[in-house]
Image (cartoon, rainbow, N blue to C red):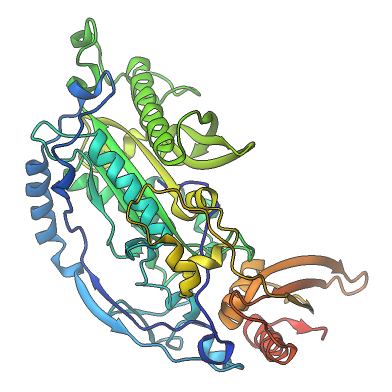
Length: 507
């Protein structure tokens, strides 16, 4: 699910004159919904939960059959393509700041073209990250986290035919429709999460997914009732060591029939999943209290086992009530790790309206979502999210381990000195958001930019114009930057802010 955990990504450039902007060439087979049952763990360990033996009834063969039918229906969305990027010099032209194609042109992503319109705001910097799929690169720290979660679910949850209960989808295309990303999840038309300033839109109907939950409806509609989805997601956000416009989520969904949920309970046959009542803080209007509490218990037990598997025994865990449009009741899990309470995931009982719309109206379920970067930064002591994009062997070789569960503590690379420059300007009268400026700085400065802070706001008493002053911290992860290099980049930021954002410079 679309966790509220704010995690994002990391670094890749090594030479400002060659790779600033990071246009890595990518090749990507856009196979939607490839069934990956990975039978290698099918014969090991059965569920430990008291209820699991009786509730985990999900035929892998049935899932494959349903998915095959759905694949035929979705064949038109399968594509294979390349997109080529040009290396940037120190002073990229203004045309490089927006996605390729002028208004009326098209944006090409993973071999498919999407007509541009007023919603198009995909920067070339972000476009260069599409198809990298760090979570599928063997021995990458994000891959290690993904594999640990997969291994846990494969071992702990086995279907009655000896196959893994949960199927895994880690190569679904990040290009989705706005209906998939928002409407299918019951997100209201006026919800702030839809804002252009917070998302990367190809046009008014297509976007880069903001969460892996964008695939929930399609997978449920295909007949799946237990699955994990892993993938890169995209959000416009602030610039610091914890945030990056591309990050990776892992999401889990499980549905239960009446028999699966109540089997083994005294008088279970008399209990019901659904009723018509009123919504409260504890349940939805269509769910019985008994069904809600059992689903909530199974969800929390499942996630407690998962984080214990990742972080170790003796972990202090607490649950915080929260809100998501697509679950109710909803919770965030916090763990006490090294004496600090950290939010690690979001979860809840799935909104029945969502489940019903996907054709599973006789089932009830839960969903959760976590950020791979968030888990990896905590578990491996990785201090800066840009590092996940690094191709420096000093970083990558630290995670080349023979056992995915091996303890790894990141040994910091040399920390090179930071160079700080301020920029101030008068804002245009309309259509300006801070995320526009953050995205522009990332596009020009790439991963040379460590963070951007808004340090001052000023409103002129007579003209009522507003001025912002930002402090940009430049720091290369692998070498010392020169003042001359940074001066070129910073000047390019100033020029682009005027040309692209319509600000009036005070520099």
